[in-house]
Length: 285
Image 1 (cartoon, one colour):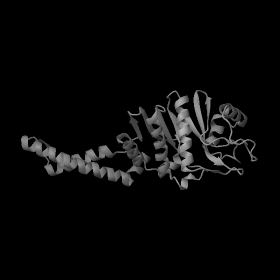
Image 2 (cartoon, one colour):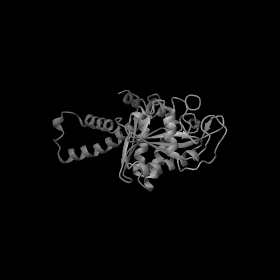
Image 3 (tube, rainbow, N blue to C red):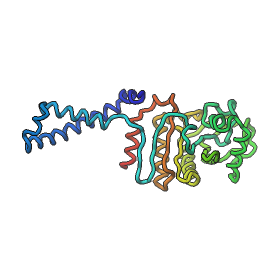
Image 4 (cartoon, rainbow, N blue to C red):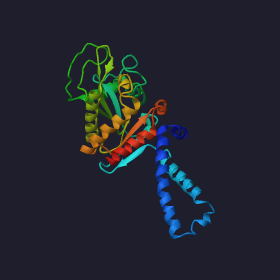
């Protein structure tokens, strides 16, 4: 209900409502004129002048078409869907995307923030068992050759290529841990749009190969300590993630559904109606 009230305050809602209202007003004007021409007495039973019938019908139709709905879109080509939800990423009950640095560090709080997705992976899934998560990551990275070995820095010392995906399977859920940021010897991370796009391309390849087509849930990539929020604001970050997934899906189907999970504190910063329009535009293109 709060989200619906918030959507009513958005300019995108009123723009869409105006478009549907005036389009329906013109259409129904023509229809009622034809009805009145061929069946002159049929409108009399409403006991309302035509000048009131038209706006009433147009108002109702415009509201019906513009009423805020869950943000989701189904596509037939490719056979997939995209959905936005607000909540806890780790309560979705499906495969998850976890963004990491090219060192795959997991120690909190001095190297990795406890509030980050990988920090939540450690606390919610592994119950703060660092050694068990480190062991699972090492197994997932087996066979992947590091770019640098023995880098002098706190935490992990082996650096992997951007876009490396370490896939952990735990309790029937795949955790796709993708390296999309560079970390320096002081454990500061950075990335760029080009790096992020490359990492996502590799991520979708891994999801396609390992998920068996099951849905995958992802956070809004690039909003944390990577510094991308100044270059890619949250609304653009959502579009970026959707575009990457759809381009990959058009080459070859990635999975049944992408669920983008929004943190409750970020919801008010997002124009959901604009995101829905964007999803629909991809269906028409």
